[in-house]
Amino acid sequence: MKYTPSLPGHNDNVTQEHPLRDFLLILSALAALALLGFFLLGLLIDAVVDRMEPGTEASLTRIIAAGMPAEPVKADARQAQLQGLVDSLRPCIGLAGPAQVRLAASATPNAMVVPGGTMYVFSGLLQHVKSENGLAFVLAHELAHLAHRDHLRALGRGIVLYGLAALVTGDNSALAGVLAPAQHLGESSYSRSRESAADDLALRVLHCRYGHAGGATEFFTALRDKHGSDIPGSHYFASHPAMDARIDALHAAMARAGMKTGPVRPWLPHPVPRALPQDKAAGRAGWVSRWHNPSTPLG
Image (tube, rainbow, N blue to C red; front, side, top):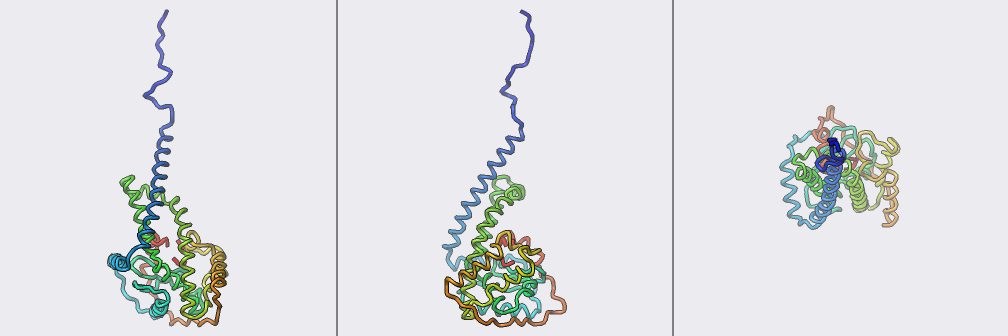
């Protein structure tokens, strides 16, 4: 018999599958584990924040505020008006921590709070309210986020996301970029629930301050009438309830609580300065959004 050399039909040392398949499987498994870890740690953060002592919250607020970039005080009487309105709402919400208003030059109709107790009001928002009551509801909404410690929840979840990325890959930018879209889908639903809770508390604060709930839907109605369901430059709709649903929810809450509407006070802002300086917050919104989600007007 003549010997005919040939290669073996199967070689255990050579894979029969494309190496990219194994890479994608490993990457998918890591992403799934990281997202599960993010979800579970997010629940843990919520539990810790809910049980945090007021003294601990105050200490954290001071530490965070000390790390924020210092900003010069701008001579804008409108900012003083906003601060006075915020201060008048504080007794109705029982907020013990700071709530310092900063007016930022931006066409975006928005307001948001950031870690450290600073509330940024974008000047574009003032063009969408006609009454003090309507503006008070927006500011009360932001105070509600502070009262609910949502800024601490968002800060904690942001730290967890980048911490998990660094733990798994050693580079917090690589995995965070992969996880961000999927993480955002889950966080949007969570954020909408926090926004609805802030609306409910803001409604009670408005009723406490003025004796009725007139003006509660003024800002949302103005946005809807002017921009429809799409507000350019705003981060409202990815993480906030739909505008019509938000207005309907407020009307339903007013009906359940037996709240009535009443005459509203006109908002009479001081004259606009010749040139309102561009606040750093307007250009720093991307940094803020990592902690507050702030992705919408009314953060």
